[in-house]
Image (spheres, rainbow, N blue to C red):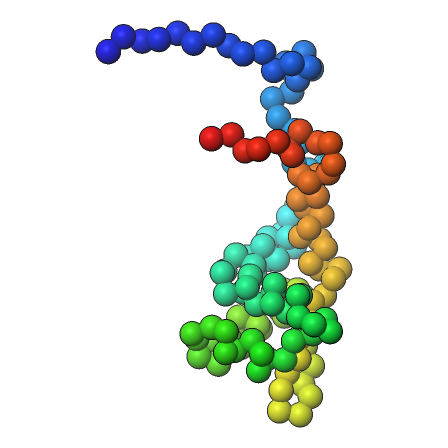
Length: 134
């Protein structure tokens, strides 16, 4: 099989500036910020916890009863409770017992920290709005 030489394509003004790609962060994370964000990312790195977080956040009234969350999954109540505890320990959700049931809500300040980590990726007009390369 013969080797083929491909020409290099110009990257327009990026090539002139020497930039290979758009930055994904406004500034590097400090060691403390990285450790705190890692806890949050670990908490949402599980599909069940990510779904629970999205269900709580999108629930009418801004809070969800645990009774509305358990029937959606084919998991035992103790397993759902464990996942909710991980989210709560990470500070992503708050909860309060009302009679028999516990009601959960999103903690916006903490969830927004996760969103802010990726905010530069979604700013209008940034090069990152281009389709991903295959």
